[in-house]
Image (cartoon, rainbow, N blue to C red; front, side, top):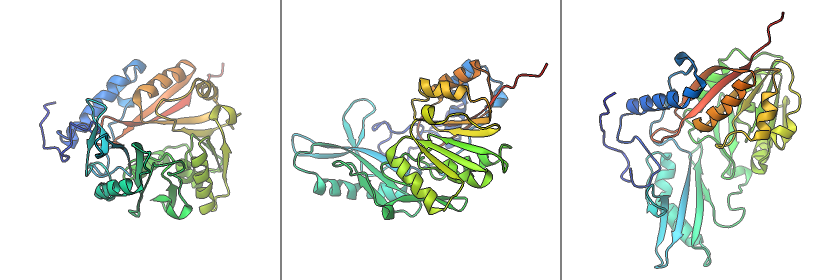
Length: 344
């Protein structure tokens, strides 16, 4: 495929290191990501049709609801707010970001002024978090202990299928709100759901999947160990008065226990993938009807999938989503099913 150069929308492109492909059309970017995914998945020797074409993001730019900034006060008394350079550890000062939600991008100059006013005398370095939600409010934190904690009235939210999902500065949540309905709709279209299904939402975070599918199943079991996420998960469940959702606090490998026959599990682990203990627990859960593995790191995903395949699981389909346009990252959903032994 011949690459045709286009003018990047961001004046910092190539300097701050946060983006890629801004010098290419979106069609070319998606083609590159499709090819990269085929290469990464090559060790699994899947049929080419099993890996679907990447689902594009509705928003190519201005989609990120969260940015993480580096802030530094130099020895000369200069204040720097921006991102680490791709070539060095130095901060590239910025005043806008073309992949951030416009509310966040417009807020960056004001953020710098606010940090300077707030910064204690003994602070020279800070890591800041800035976030927004569907309603456009912007909050930030990162100076001092508990500075990311928020009151319920300040929680962010996004609405999917009529349900508000609340999240906060100190919780994990998907960065691209515009493509979330695409992901949820795809999973809802799978022929896995009925009135007897038990959904195990593992590494459940604030409860995105449990809440999004609670109306399609008999019961939802969420397992999460992060204290801030557990707090928000309970808030979300209480907010919607969900009676068929149970929240278990702790590690997946310690709390999953025996899964019920023909249940479904969704896992969305950290970027580093599954721990050895979690892997040992999940590969044995062969009463599951299906295991849906969502990952933002194709390399660790393939590493984990190799273990599942060796232990009697079959990869049913691979669906990539472009959650991170203009970056090198790819979000991938894999549907795994246990191979049933044929009766003699």
